[in-house]
Image (tube, rainbow, N blue to C red; front, side):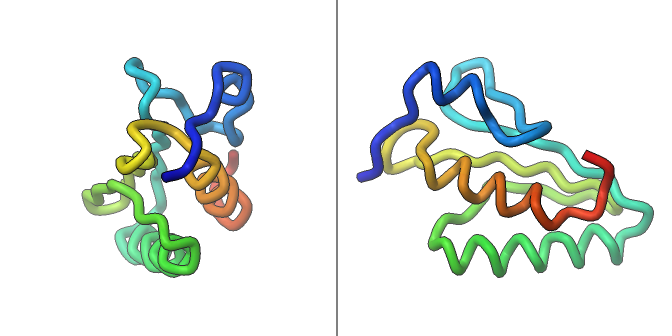
Length: 96
């Protein structure tokens, strides 16, 4: 089980990622021009998640993708979550 982030670490989340009210997950919403762009983004995130062996909770509706990251086995947010959030933020082609 991976160690949970402490309060200080939770204050420096990757750009545009928000802490949930219960402080057990981080979340970001993405909006693209088309469904194809959204689906391409999800495919890229899936590859990153598989490589990291850490998979998001997410949903897609046409050109929108909502992603929530949490380490369920640890009961909250760990470095695995912030690392995947950073990897997603590093490649996304939307204005951040």
